[in-house]
Amino acid sequence: MTVRADIFETGNPRIKSASIIINAPASKVFDVVANPSLHPIIDGTKSVKSVIKGPSRLSLGDKFGMNMEIGVKYRITNTVVEFEENRLIAWRHVGRWIWRYEFKEISPNQTVVTESFDGTQTPLNFWLKARKAYPYVQKAVAKTLVRLKEYCEAQ
Image (cartoon, rainbow, N blue to C red; front, side, top):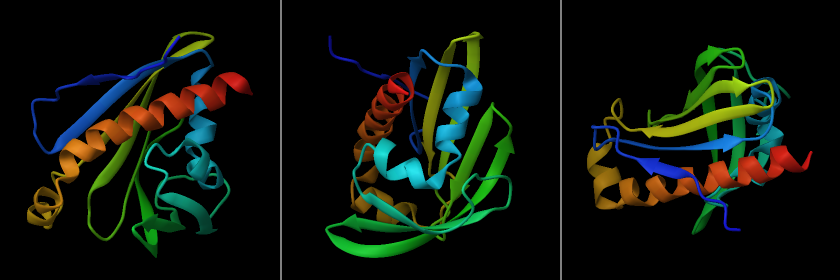
């Protein structure tokens, strides 16, 4: 059976989201997303290569650096800008677009996870549009959620 995340319209063309049900407690899924060293495993774009620096578990205000590759290799530093234990975590980098994960436990062993790419705060929207980033990240968040589900349910 093919596992898919549900892509949905947010009503804002600069916010792209998807959600998935993961058969694991919210705390377990949150711990995976809050651990930067696991990002290369769950990243649906396969552009996140490794963590450079940062804590092993993220919290509000933390900075973490990642080795990336999208055609060319580069490094990026992210800052956690939203944080609510087991419910919400989001980070952004210098481009000011945000990756947000929301967790809603629907039973002790099932969690709905929604991931969003939020470009509403970036001054570089022209660049995102020129690169056709919005359609790309719509698929990428869905792929990331599938990988997150596979990882969490295998542990």
